[in-house]
Amino acid sequence: MSNKIIIYGAGPLAEIMYYHFTHESNYDVVAFCMDKDYITAEQFCGLPLVDVAVVTQLYPPSKVQMFVAIGYKKMRNRALLFNKAKQKGYTLVNFISKQAYVRDNLILGENNVILSSCDIEPFVSIGNNNVFWTRTIIGHHAVIGDHNYISGGGGIGGNCTVGDCCFLGNGALMINNINIKDETYMIAGTIILKDTETASKYHGNPAKLIGRHADTGILIS
Image 1 (cartoon, rainbow, N blue to C red):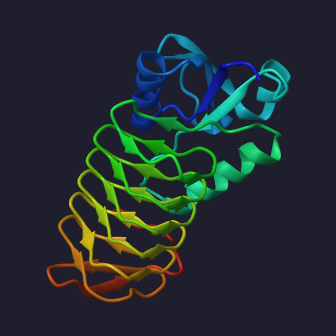
Image 2: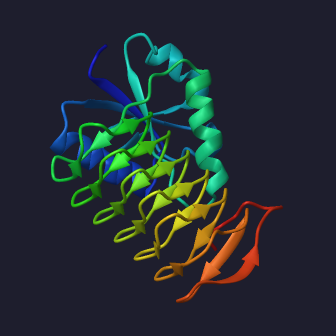
């Protein structure tokens, strides 16, 4: 497979990932794509910015791979755009910083970001489309689902399970053997001492349930 990739997105995360792919990988970013309604320029980072509706014609999945760079403002959008890219037939690439500490028995899906100073302990399983920002620690035997965003300094304890579309703010932590349900939102600095509830928002040390977002899925305001 070619090392050429197209980045789906043209926001801050897309720009950051363009930098990392360019400076710290063997991938060659050749273009960006977005949904037509959000395109306001012909280029992004000096490269073509094209309508995702025609991206397969310009950059066929047989010749180019993709990375979906969608941030955390609306966590469900991370899943929607990942699925759209897969439906178009693209292979989605991972980015693992050379400065991350990742054990060789890691099970890893597609479209994941593991940035510098992350420490992923043995026997960890990670699904698709997750972001692990700098200084994240993932404890042994942890199981991480899909479309999650773990901010800088976040910590997932050993034997923990994290569902889908969860957001951990900067420095959010949990003890071992915790089950983090789908769409859990942990405000920065939160310490989780017991299992969370689906589509729920937590804050404090120890964490307290302070809100729910099952209807909207908008985790960050």
